[in-house]
Length: 251
Image (cartoon, rainbow, N blue to C red; front, side):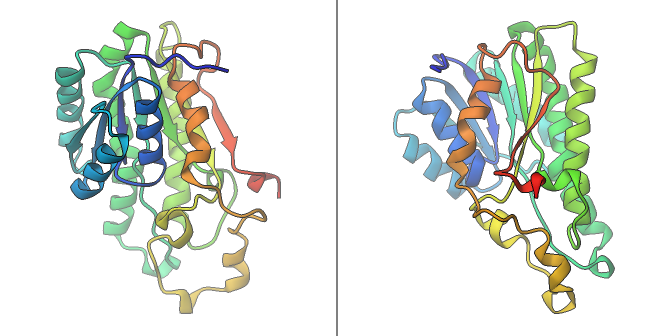
């Protein structure tokens, strides 16, 4: 299927690496105008250079601070003139034993993975209602089953899944489409290494249950589905959390 993204105005968070970078580059390659957001300024510069056609505008912002969310959307609309899609891709992972999780770690994971997407969506909604636009969130295959040593992360991704459905329910009478994808293991530093932890405390039999049978997928594996969900071509997928986990949830 050919997806028409010509001149689409898109915000992509987490665009300095991983799925965020791959998504920003895919949008740019298909004619969209991308406002790429991340706390990693050097990584953003690399993304813009890789795009190579001037279609990616970079914007450094620490989304852990919720007061930065509305200014990000305001800056994007000021630059792009409109907003057609918001892709909430920035995320963090920390692998730790129960006794080692601190309130600071919990707040960090929920701040980036849940609070930022919510307040970005809140700020973006007036513009998306005007454009009949879309939001695409990133949940995880780990949101739907119990896994040891990643409680903060997995519960944050379960929260994103439910937030996606609840936000869609609130704007169901509009033209806005809000969906999420739930990847399995992604071949990025976060996906394959996590945030490190006290591995000497882990029961490795329990830890191994988090590993999917098939090898991890490259970030580019997810861009086609993200682009489709964000595009005007998608008019019937709303409030969905789509498993794109290479069979992880089936095993």
